Figure 1: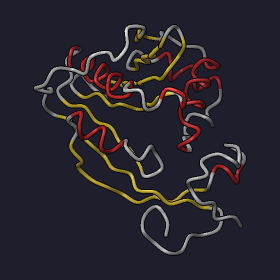
Figure 2 (figure 1 turned 90 degrees about the vertical axis):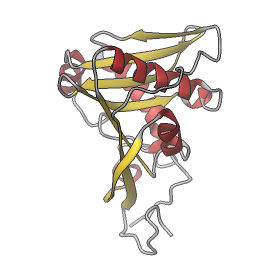
Figure 3 (figure 1 turned 180 degrees about the horizontal axis):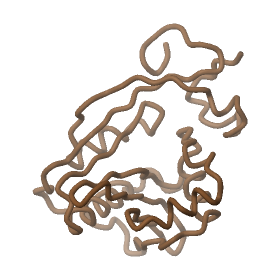
Figure 4 (figure 1 turned 60 degrees about the vertical axis):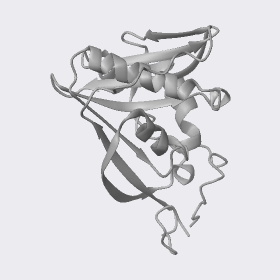
Length: 199
């Protein structure tokens, strides 16, 4: 079986299902409090490309995130300098523990482009806190609609986490792409839980 339930997979490919979610009402519950006293969430204003790559690659490698890996430094710098983008970094005792990337699509809609934790900080209750921090920031800045998507390659609790935070699935779509472990974008040993359909 593969990620989308089929029994065959083309050599060198991976299949996955993306779930698109929306939130159109401000959460009627208190935001998740900080689970530790040594946490800070700071905005990285016009972060240099190398710092962003450290965040993106470390957080995303176990889940085969590739989109920003293939951007040139010039393109990445332009993305990070956009006034529509907020890169919020979670620090635990001064160490980067994760990040949430918010992008204003228009005056009313904000998308969570990326969100995740460094591997060593997963399972400590930091995810719900950081997600709620981003949700609260988006609403505070005037959003009336938040969007996000997650896929079957992401952490197995990702979809449930978004739903618990108040997001509602609105559609799903199946995709297939080249396995980045076979194209050299990501090391081959990465994500052993996702089978490789080697050529």
